[in-house]
Length: 147
Image (cartoon, rainbow, N blue to C red; front, side):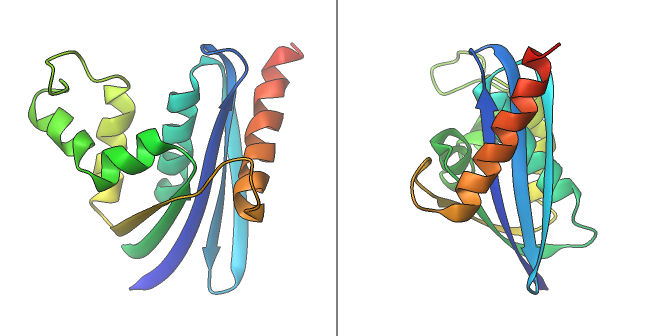
């Protein structure tokens, strides 16, 4: 199984507001940067979209080490919250609707194709790859502010 490292980040100007996401995929010493955005979204949706877009680029099952500064993403995957929400019909344990069910559905489908390990990284700190993802996400969100 190929070993791929992915860094992701999402950003939003206002919440909701214009948002962007960025990701870096690393395999065998080669890095690929991807990014995108939406005119009206939330920070959590951009965090999820970054992971989805990165995993969607993988052409075969891989051992993926995913780095994110989003506790929402990391905890929901690592602690099984997202799987629990799905089992309960996209309801949280308090029976309130789970937010972003459409994105979680897609993310869980993609994650099931890989051996995924999630790692939390402190945002806006010393991690160069996380900082680069943040730069890409912010730049994407600003494209919608200029219109």
